[in-house]
Image 1 (cartoon, one colour):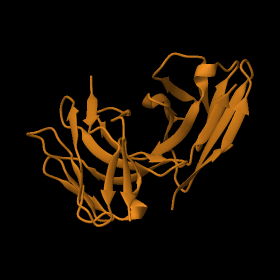
Image 2 (cartoon, rainbow over the protein chains, first blue to last red):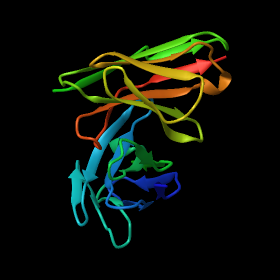
Image 3 (cartoon, rainbow over the protein chains, first blue to last red):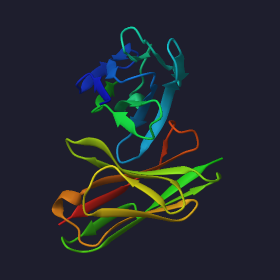
Length: 112
Length: 111
């Protein structure tokens, strides 16, 4: 079945540091890929998405590129802020499916 | 624009009591609707989804049930809660099959 593996957290960075959160997936066909962010006590917010190979999703300074050859969708941001502290989830939706398959989440803490 | 509401925001219930969580979506017609549970150490789990009124698909057999009495209303229920039902319940909607948007969630504690 489909699966998503993302790097274990927690990740602690200083403000303005470069962020990478690794995400790899296993799925048949061409899934759609997503990053969601969850702030404490809140629901999930869609951060970005990509629906086909080599697509780059971007939002609020975050970027991720759909790499079919390496089955990866790594999240990056050039300069993190304290307000980026949250849990980040990588997810996929398989072709023809209604179900999102999530990674376990990576907790990011940004310190001033 | 579309908005999604869930209530209550928090709930504390005794074991064996019934449950009803409600989710409504505004600003769109005939959305796909979803219930997820987020439990500590177990990630996000899809419980039910619905592609139309009265159409419910269950992903995980358990003592929970779902209903969709109106186009933009999705209800999660239980007749008798278990301790293991504690968690954070999230409702989501989509128009496209894959891009889902989540509500603020309900924190359920079963004692």
